[in-house]
Amino acid sequence: MHSWRSTLDAAGISGAPIRADFTAAARLVLRRESAPYLALRLLAAPHLQPWLAAGLAFMNRVDDIAETGTTRTRLDGLRRLGEQVESALAGGRGGDPVLRAYAHAVHERALPDTWVKRFLEGAATAEAVFAGFGTEADFQAYVDAYAWPAFVSFTGLQYPGGPDEAQAAALRRLVDAAQRVDFLADLAGDLAAGRLCLPRERLDEHHVTRDDLEQGEDTPAVRALLAAETRRARAALDAAADVVDLADPGLRRVLVTMTDLMGHQLTAVERAGVRALRRDVGYGAVAPLRILARAARR
Image 1 (tube, rainbow, N blue to C red):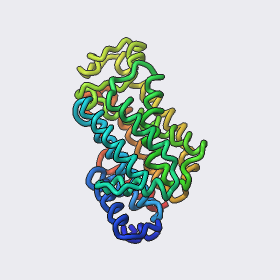
Image 2: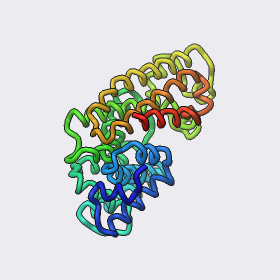
Image 3: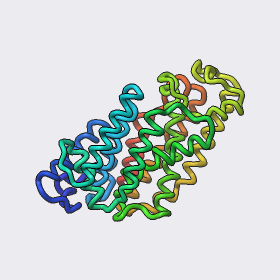
Image 4: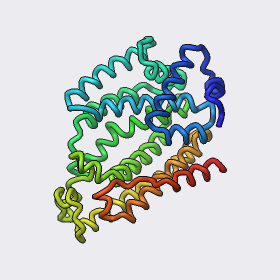
């Protein structure tokens, strides 16, 4: 692993204040998401690491505000954050080092700020007021409004000038797959928190009720529903395989690891079946280390 100082040098980030901002953003990621941070530090090219650490810190900041507290609290927090981000992108030196680092990354990597604005708008219109999906079209609208811009606001920093049309489309396919896997793996926890992240039309197709899922009912209809959803997730993950080829060479090992981990988790969901309604499906302790080690050897 390269020293953090050497990655800042490789990225051409000079000046003590802005280097301190990027360091603060990286430390935030380390505290909140140690596994992605470790993958980034071990597998990404040194010159990309500070940009992506700032992007991930920013994405986490928005997510935390959009998912915490009452709807009114979320919307007020996002409004304030939007004002701070606008100031930071305009060159302001406000008090938040994460926003300063991210604004610097957006400027230096020439990421179109339309992605950032779409992400913030989607956080308010799709995530903060999330009430589930009626149809597959509702899920796709959620991906377009929130999940896709969020991911591009982070991973789009790998590309000088931002992703082109083909690269952005590949990132969207990956986000589509990632959301499907996440929603299945976190089904039990989401249901316990009052969130149903499967489209209601699919429950109707299988004659399954929300109460069936909340009670963890082991019936042929429930098993058929979950099997159909895992097949959709598997097809989406297969369709996203080209994201690696379209990535910057310095980020390919990270994306291979991400897709391998998603595939591993989806396999665990498939094996769990209706048990996924009673307990969230994690990665386990050994598989992530094995996948990370394999990627590091590439």
